[in-house]
Length: 189
Image (cartoon, rainbow, N blue to C red; front, side):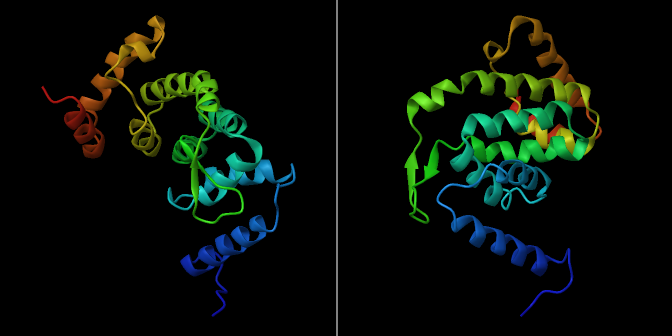
């Protein structure tokens, strides 16, 4: 069966499969793949499928570089890119990686590598908090709220802690039922 209608689910599945096959042909991806993989991960609307782009980007170009690029999308992208960056970020935070040349076999990330990324995780938390408070786009807020860490003020510098209360107020009084419900569950009295 050959999907002929671009944009259909079958066509998208075939395109992703072709990309996966092409990526497997390389032991190490060329530099020109970096931006294409990150952008594909950001623009992929399905949070399950964007892993097919973000994982190879992390494995070939490093977690720090990919996270830095996603942080750039969150801070300066369109609303669609901001939501996409949040969806893609998930796959950069997995404390494992695919073992080289072993499909489906995972190995833990080096603890030293993980520790070296603390600055990016802190920058991400700050950007997420600012985005939730300042961006009224519903899709962005829905994705961002999943990344919010509001129970521990120590995650934020003192000058940003006032935004925690503002985020909670916005969430509890939001017109969107999904956002209100998330905050009700997180902050039960």
